[in-house]
Image (tube, rainbow, N blue to C red; front, side, top):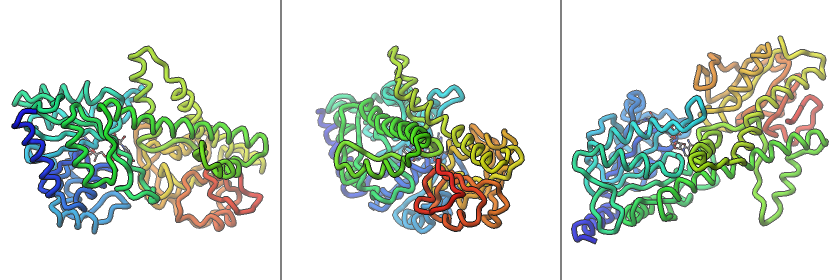
Length: 448
Ligand SMILES: NC(=O)c1ccc[n+]([C@@H]2O[C@H](COP(=O)([O-])OP(=O)(O)OC[C@H]3O[C@@H](n4cnc5c(N)ncnc54)[C@H](O)[C@@H]3O)[C@@H](O)[C@H]2O)c1
């Protein structure tokens, strides 16, 4: 190791230990903002970068736009030096830069890296020797090495390269996947181990030192690609297992077996089984999207990821299955779907969160409307729903009164604030896609 590089490494580690290290987090969304707060809690001075002026203004005014993050949390972070900005020139003042921008799919279900590319192009002119640069956005294996590093190396005015060997000066570039699970309070954030894979050993060492300040356990892997693949394995594992129980649910319904009873019994096995639950389809920014990042990349290697394709097919079909169930349940009481009044409960993609990205509710509402149903929705987290990548609804949440007016009430998101016994009591017909009415005995419930 050159003396200069060695002293840089020691200096940055010292700054982490003494909390003098300045942390820049790019993308103040569902991932970046909680991460900023975690670093602030550990007395780091954090700067949050975002291109959305309203988010920057709100954060600097001490308010929040994510339900589970309270203004008091922002105020506490501000007391530790937290500020938000859209000014990329401040990147030069940071010791570590962590990128948490979106990685969606385009209209052909292919990776859309435009946010990552845009971010890296914006920071490249401001990066400096010895900085730690971490990508946390979920993506396909190879992104850090093939996209991020070249953009940084070509875009910086000092000719800096990614440091690959111990002692080589330059930029320390790392991939470290985010494992945020919104709404999951069973594991404290700092108890979730953090995987890091650097382009060189010093990068991995630095990232490990930094994340050790906020996570109890850091798991170093040999490369950014291994870290990128780790995240995809985790999400594909979930996607495939959810598809499996979604398929088995449909079979169980035909066989007159309660899939939830079966899962509850199976999960008593103390080894070799992990419970996944069926539902109305996948939602959120991760599970419906991330597997396609890998299947797209796999094609470059003449490889078909058959499990991913099959799971995608089954999970994508679930809202159509729900539509069929609503129609069949109405048919049982001699009503056509066309013209029936249907209330959809919940548009968030899962319980108790304020995120509706890729939510199956949106598809279910559109399918019901397409069939001529008169659809209303209720969601305490979304007073209105406008339009997005796959939907154009322009609806307002309806109050939860006079449930008897609806021909069917469909539980799509099982928010814990809903009073399920009252919903069952007051509704003519309940279609429950989440097992939210478990334990309630009533002839007007169809669990599907
Ligand atoms: N939300 C989750 O539960 C979750 C969990 C694990 C991983 N991830 C991954 O983390 C990444 C971020 O997801 P998210 O849910 O936080 O997204 P988000 O949409 O909530 O937040 C992204 C933020 O980045 C900002 N942004 C976009 N381009 C920018 C740019 N060039 N410069 C600065 N800011 C920019 C946006 O304005 C937005 O505030 C994605 O890759 C996602 O797959 C998300």
